[in-house]
Amino acid sequence: MGLDRKKAFLALPAVVFGADWTLKRYIEKNMETGEEKEVCGGRLIIRKHYNDGAAFGLFGAYPKAVAAVHGGLLAAAAACYAVLLREEGKNSIKIATGLLLGGGFCNFWDRLTKQHVVDYMSFNVKCSRLRKVVFNLSDLFVFAGAVMNLFFVNLAKKRKKE
Image (cartoon, rainbow, N blue to C red; front, side, top):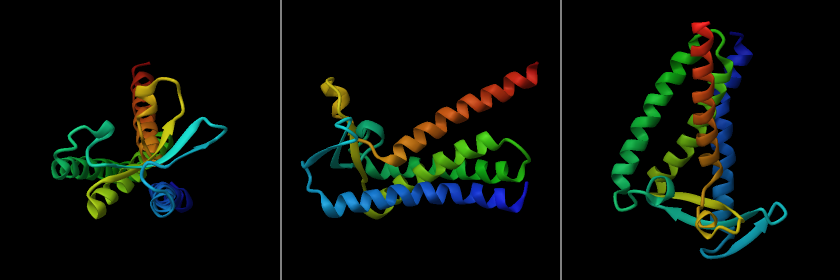
């Protein structure tokens, strides 16, 4: 792998981290809890929300345990990424893992420095249960990276069998 490509793969998690970290700081400085703003033609709602737990606030009563599990999973993913970066090819899996790590590290940084994750986006839909779900850009990158990894790893396995 060329040095430029390796640098790009190393930079990807940092770029994802930086993008969401910047948005979180903006939200914290410029919005009050409970305030809402519609953006993207009314499709998204921006609001400040603090999540002490995992996704959807699960295990919110155990923030230290959530942080420990989060850190352990992140360390395992980072180790896999380090091994993956030494291999030729597998660029799609490298991108997927880089997205997952960048988002995971940003949310973990919140857990370490604030003891909660700053969430700020909701879909503006009629379903009130879905509308109440608040997330951040890192969550989207973690989700996208995980789904992409599942897809590309399964595709690679399928190709090996053929």
